[in-house]
Every structure is written in structure tokens, then in C-alpha cells.
Length: 440
Ligand SMILES: Nc1ncnc2c1ncn2[C@@H]1O[C@H](COP(=O)(O)OP(=O)(O)OP(=O)(O)O)[C@@H](O)[C@H]1O
Ligand SMILES: [Mg+2]
Image (tube, rainbow, N blue to C red; front, side):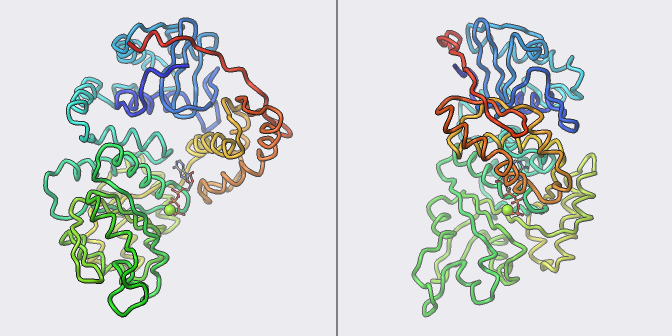
């Protein structure tokens, strides 16, 4: 097998996002004919008689399957990356246009010429991170939250573009439990840390600061207090990596005084430690996550078609006000974003990813999943309100035994997850796709 296209390439990332949207009609769980959710990240694997389009953990395979027709290209051989790029920007783009299940084409969403220019610039100065690239990276990992991800990517990209910030970038992510808020911050940190040496990541669970006497510990206990002189991860990270992402998780469970402590940082761009030292945080990105917001609010957000970022920001601030967060703090947060409850389509994608991930924990390499297995898991009613974590438990419950059997019976062999009852795993033969003649 070979992978000609890199997941970090923004051109490919944008196409991958589009391809995902193009292929999946998850509401009634209708995979494209021949599509086999499988392993792998993003890439295209091409051999003289075989073409694979990998989109995250899903794989579209040809030429025998009708997916090759979907791509309208059948069997392709590419002699160089340049030729592959031409195909991607020409025939593949047209194929997207003609695919009946699609409502948008690649060009509706991304100006490929502009993306190419961005790619070239990226090569010149590798630490430049464009909003589109950031969004594509987030969207690969976080499903069903596109409007929120776009808003976050735009906001962060603007912060990164500033040569001198007066204060840290600050974002509040509101949403029900288990819809991808914390995950998004992790993905953001991973992306930025891969591009810039001054980006680190520190996660502070604010539920540990719910009592008044704990508040001072956030910046290091003052002399004479328990914990004085101990490590202060927040300050240590910012000292060594000033452009770090700081995740203040479970903000709604923090003592209100935590807000007072952070106001100075949001205002003046510095944090005063318990020992009197001052740490610069102007280049940092502070992200707060909270479940603050009524059920009605999150239901309403999910039904908004355009999800105008400013209107959502305003509505989120009202929810924070209603939850008695101090107006002075709300006013200092740069952007508020709402994460929607997960719909059936997003759950189907997350479940597909979850099956591969959980199987790997049992030492099983899943290369393909029967769509009806995913459909059955999605069909469990009433789960939307519980977030994605509950689906992970269900995958383990329903498929754990099949994974144990597969680990024992098909040691090291890639398997296909098949519908039951009971669900089981069958071994699959993975072909060898020959030498990498196209990677010129
Ligand atoms: N939108 C999503 N896309 C992909 N995976 C998701 C998504 N939402 C949740 N998950 C999965 O569920 C797990 C929990 O998600 P996450 O920690 O981001 O939830 P959260 O929104 O922060 O919830 P909480 O408010 O309870 O902290 C993740 O590890 C991930 O596997
Ligand atoms: Mg969380």
C-alpha cells in the first residue's frame, strides 16, 4: 500500500471534508455502494488496477465496486504528484459536481486556486496556519459541529496572524455533555503544536477548583499555604511555551472567584503567580468549556440553518448571564461558540470511528464494517441526549466479545465487522499494492 497524499496537506484536507459530505447519507444510513468504512487516515492509494480513496477511517475502493463510478474515473494510474493534483482539481471536482447525493461541490466551499496559493505559502513559511486549513483539520476529527468549528478556526487564525497581541485569544465553548468540546481543544492543540515550537498544551479541570480555598492554588499557593512551592502547570507551560493552548475545562463547576483570577489575564495579558512573579500570556489561547445553557437553547441552536456566528455568540453570552456568570468576565471573553447536540449522521460517523478505536484496544485491526452494524447502533433511541460517550459504551457492550474472539482466532489479521446476531469479525485479505511508482 502507498499513500501519495498527506493528511496535513490543506488541499487534500479540504477535499477529504467534501468527500465525507458527499458520500454519507447517514440519516437513513445509506453508505455509497461499495464503500467500506475502514482504517487509515486521509490519503489516496493508487495502483494500476486498484484505487483507494481514504477519508479518515473510511475507505472507498475501486475499480470493481461502484465507488469507482462515483469517482467517475475507474482505474487510474498517476505518474506524479502533479498529475494526481490535476486529477483532484479537475475530474474529481467534476465528479463531485455530478454526484446526485451531493448538494455542494468542492468549489462551492473552497477556492482551490486560493488553497494552492496557501499551500505554496505554507511551504515558504511553515508556521503560518490558515483558517481553512485549521477548520479542515478539526473537521476530520470532530463530526457534526461544522459551524462551531469554522467559527473557532476563524477566530484562532486571526489571533495567530497578529504580530503583537495585547491579550490572549479567549474562547468559550458551550454545549451539552459528550458532543466534542474538549476533543476540539485537543485537536486544535495538536495541530498548532505540530506547526509551531512555542505551542504547548495544558488542561486544567476547573471542577477541582470548586471550593473557595482552592482558588489560589490555580496560580500557585502563596507562602505559608499548603502546596506552596509545588508545580503550577499553567504557569510553567506558559513560561516555556508562551503561545500555548490552555483548556479551562468544566468552567461551570469552578468557584466564581476563578473568574476574578482570570480576568486580569484576559484584560492585561499577564498572570501573577502566588509567589509574586508575573507570567506573560498575550500569545496564549485560552479555551473555556462548559455545559452552561438550557436544553431548549441547545435544541434551538441545532435547528438554526445558517448559524450566524455573531448571533450564536450573543445567545451564548445570554445563557452565561442567566447562569450568573459575572458580566465583567463574560465581556472579556473574545468569542462564545455553541456546540449542537449530535444528530444521527454525526453519531454514525463517530460510531464508525469508535468501532475502529475500540477494536484496536482489543488488538484487533478493523479494516471494514458492515453498515448495518453502524445503523443498528445509531438506531438506539434516546441516545442523542447522552452524547457520544454512551455510544462508546454500547460499542464495547455489543462488539466486545466479537473483538475478543477475533483477537484469538485471527491473530494480527485485518478483519471485517459483520452483522449478527451475534455480531462477529471475519478475516479479510489485504492486497499488496505494489511499488510506489507515482510518488515522483
Ligand atoms: N463531535 C464529535 N466528533 C467526534 N468524536 C466525538 C464528538 N463528540 C464526542 N466525541 C467522542 O466522545 C468523547 C467525549 O467527547 P468530549 O470529551 O469532547 O465531550 P465534551 O463535549 O467535552 O463533554 P463534557 O461536557 O461532558 O465534558 C470523545 O473522546 C470522542 O471520542
Ligand atoms: Mg469536556
